[in-house]
Amino acid sequence: MSTARSRWNDARGTAQPTGGTVVTDEQQRPPAAAVVFDALGAEYEKAFAGSTTHRHSLEWLLGRLEPGSRVLDVGSGTGRPTAETLAGAGHEVLGVDVSPVMVELARRRVPAATFQCADVRDVPLADGSFDAVCVYFSLLQLDRREQADLVRLLVRALKPEGYMVLATVPLDVEGVDATFMGQPVRVTSFAAQDLTTVAEEAGLEVLAQEASLFTPAHPDARPEPHLFLHCRRRAATPPGV
Image 1: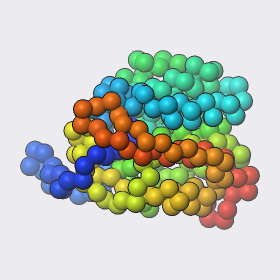
Image 2: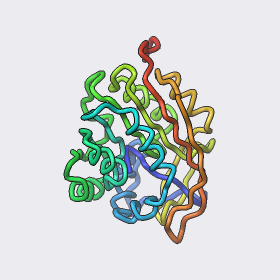
Image 3: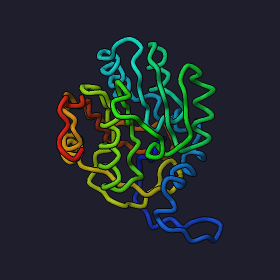
């Protein structure tokens, strides 16, 4: 999961809050994401464990990191495969996720990494403090402005010429109420070229990208497009970033 990890299957009517309490969209984020991924727990890991494109992405990153690199995993979920793979290769990994259930699972599964239950936007991140940042499907429950702002924030946390991997479902949708693995979610995403523009305007150079069609191992799942952008922070950051 993440500040907002999620993908979607069928568009549907607006989800009604439970318990009879009316809350605003702002009050729902990020707690709404935490509720979804608390409910999914280990099922999320099982559903997406078969993604070879995700594995390829991690191999790309591992091939570029110096030994003992410091890596931030945004929306770290259960810690698998990202934190587990990176920590197993000897890197220092900090995973951040809003779901208490996911964080507890990750701490048990990947004791070699450190995990924090928080919205990454609330975590003090010193400028230039990470060699790499992973953002695997962690933006989808944020609106577009929030997504772009978060990418800029994470770029500042990267060392110059540090690496970032951005992965999403590349669809031109905004504020769509949908069902994801049986859970009601509201999702927003960018088309592929628009996400590339977000990355470049934040101060990243897109070095490579890989697209695939993946069907999660879940009875309610349908094939969904995935896009992985493999990026490097430019040595000279654009004004205002």
